[in-house]
Image 1 (cartoon, helix red, strand yellow):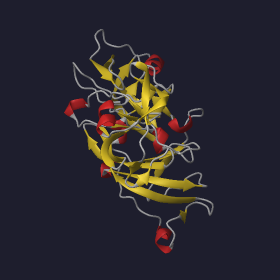
Image 2 (spheres, helix red, strand yellow):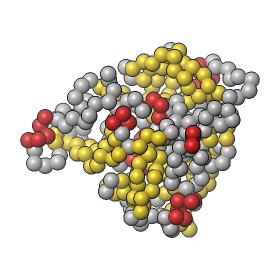
Image 3 (cartoon, helix red, strand yellow):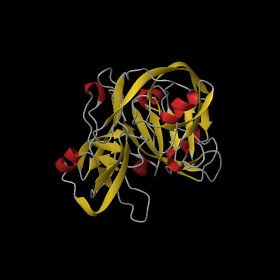
Image 4 (tube, helix red, strand yellow):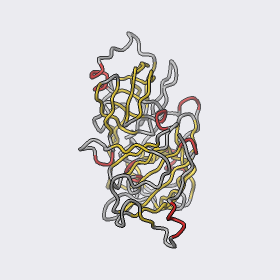
Length: 322
C-alpha cells in the first residue's frame, strides 16, 4: 500500500494491507536464561531478533534472506499473506509450486497469483515460517506498483502470515523492529519503561488486529497497516462520516496488480485510537472496500512517530505514550 503522490499520481501499495530506547526489565540481568517472566510466573517472553528498519519514501523496509540471498521486502501488517514480485522471483531463482495458487486482495480487487516455494526464508537469522503442520514459507507471486516519490524498489511484501508467528515491536523513530516469542502472557506484560496504552482489537478479525477508532466522533474500524503509506478511508468510512468527494479526484491509489483507483485528500477534525487523539489529520479517501472489511487503514504515517507493539500472541496492540 503506498503514498499518495500529488496529481497525477497518488500511489498506495495496497497489499493482499515517542520513541524511547528499548529498556529491558530490571530482572533480566539476573537471569541466565534468555526467558524472563513479566506480570506473572506463567508469562514468558524472549527477544528473537532486532532488525534494522529502513524508513524511505514512507515505506518500512527490511532485509529478508531468501535461499541465502538478500532481498528488500516492505513490512506490510495489512497484508494477509506475503508476496514476491515476478522480477525478484526470477532473480532469486525461486521454484514455483505447480499445484498451488494464491488469491491476493489488492486495490483493483481480487488477483489470482502463482506461488513460489523458497527453500529457506529468514529475517536477521530467524527462520520465517507460516502457521500449519508443515511450517513452510510460501510466497504469492505478483506485481507491485512503483514506490512513491521515486523511493527504492522492493522485492516483495512481508505480511501477517509470516509476522504473526511472533509479537512484533515497531520503533520507527529508532529505525528498528524486534521480534518476540511470547507465551502465557495476558494484560500489560511489556518490558517497557514509561506509560503505554493497551488496546483490545475488535472481535472477529483474527491476526488482522483491527482496532476501534473515533474519527470526527464517529466509531470506525481501523486496520493497522504499515504497507499503506497514508492513513486512508475506504467506502464504508466515507459513508459513515458523511464525506463527499471532489468533483474531480485529486489522484489515484495503486497497489498489488496494475490497476489504479481514484482518491482525494480530506482532513479529519479528530482521530482517536486508544487514549491518543490527533487533531486536523490529513487522510486519503476512496470508494474502495478493504479486506478484511474495515472503515480505514492506519498507515505508515500513523506508525512512523510511534512505538507500537503488535501482540499476535495475546491479541492486543500497545502504543507508547508521550
